[in-house]
Length: 586
Image (tube, rainbow, N blue to C red; front, top):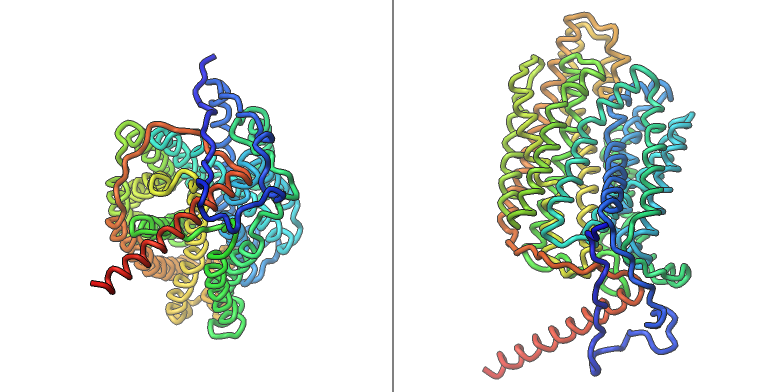
C-alpha cells in the first residue's frame, strides 16, 4: 500500500567545537542518551493507517471542543438538580476552560521531552476519567472537580493533535488537515448545544458526559495502534527531572488565581473585596515571576524567543482577540435564544445550525485554499474584518425574532471565526524555527484558551451589570422583588426556574432587559475583535514550505536546541558589544 508520510528526519546538529558548552551535559551526564540508544525511526503510514489516525485525532478534538459548550443549555437543569449556588453555578462551565487554559503549554513541553504519542495517550486517559466522574457526579463539588480533570485532558488533546499534525506534514500540506481540524472544532462548538439540549430534554444531562466514553475510547485505541511519529523513549525518571517544575507551578498557579478572581468578582464576593483583589493581583504577580524565571530555566515551558519580532507578537495578539471573541456567541447566543426569544434548549440548538454549517464550510475551504496557494495572510485579515462586522450587527439584536438578520449574521459570524481557527496556527508555525513548533503551538493554545476563559467571565460580568440597571423596570412590571434580586444578582443564566411563572407582560419586560444587556455586552466583544483586526496588519507574510522532515523529540533534541540558542545569544551579545565599541570610537 502507498506510503503517504515520511518518517525520515535529520538529527539537530550540536554546536561546533569551540562553541559555548558551559551548561552542556558532560560525558557523565545522565540527561542526554548516547547516540547508540537512539530509537529506530517510526514506520511510514499507509493510506489506510493515515486515514484512521486522522479520524482518531479529529475525534479527540471534537470531544475536547464539544465539552466546552455541550452543557451550556443543560446548565440551568444541572444547577437545579445539584442545588448550585450563585457562586458555584458559573464554575460548571468555567472550571473546564480554566483547566484547559492553564495546562496547554505544559502538554507541549512535556511532549517535547517524552514524545507526542505517549503524552497524547496520557491526555486521552485523563479526559476519559474526567468524563466518567462527571457523569457519576452527585454534588456540585464533585462535578466541578471532574470538569477540572476533563479540562486538563482536553487541553492535552487539543494541543497535542495540532502539534502531531505539524510533525507529520509540511507547512503547505498542513493547510488541508488544519482546515479539517478547524471544521471539526467549529462543528463541535456549534452543535454542542444541540446535543446537550437534546440529552437534557429527552434523557438526562449526565449523557453530556457518558457521550464521551465510547468515542474517546475508540480514538485512544486507534492512536495506540496506528499513530507512527518519532518516539524518543525517554526514561521516565530522566524525563521528569528535565521538566520545568517551577515554571509549571507558576503558570498554572497564576492562571488559576487570576481566573478565580475574575470568576468570583461580583458573584460570590464584591469586586473590591480582599479575596478578589488579592487573587487577581497575585495572579498577575505570578505571571511576572513566571516570565522572569523562564529566562533561566534549562528547558523553558515558554521560551522568550517565540515572541521575538513584531510579526510573532502581532500573531499572538490576534490569537488572543480571536479566542476571546470566538467563545462569546457560542456561550451567549443560546442565552439570547432561550431567555430573550423564549426558545427551548432544543430549539436554541437548532437555531444555531447556521453557525455550525458556516463554521464547517469556511474551515475546510480555507484549508484547501492554503494548501493549494500557500497564501494565508489575507485570510487572517479578511476573517477578522468579517468577524468584527458580524459582532457589530449583533449589537442591534432585540427581543423580536428577526429571522433573516439572525440567520444571515450567524453565517457571517461563523465565516469570520472558522476561517481563522487554524490559519493562525499555520502562521505562527511558519514564523518560528521547526524545532520550536511544539512550544509555539502550545503557547498559541494557551493564549487562545486563556482568552476564551477570560472572555466568558467578563461577558457574564458585563451582562449581569447591565441587567442590574433594569431592576426597577422589572419590579415595575410586577415581578416579585426577591426574584428580581436573584436574576440581577447572578442567577439570570440559571434562572429558567425563576421565570417559569411569569405572565406575558412580565416575560416581555424580562426579555427586553436581557436583550438590552446582551446588546451592551456585544459592544465590548466588537471592540476587542476590532483590535485583533488592526493587529493583523503587523503580521509578516512568509512562504510556506512544501518539504518536510519529521520533528524529533526527546532529551537529546532538547539539549541540542538549548545549546543552539545559547550560542546564538552569545554571538548576538558579542555583536552588540562590538557595535557599541565602534559607535564610541566614531
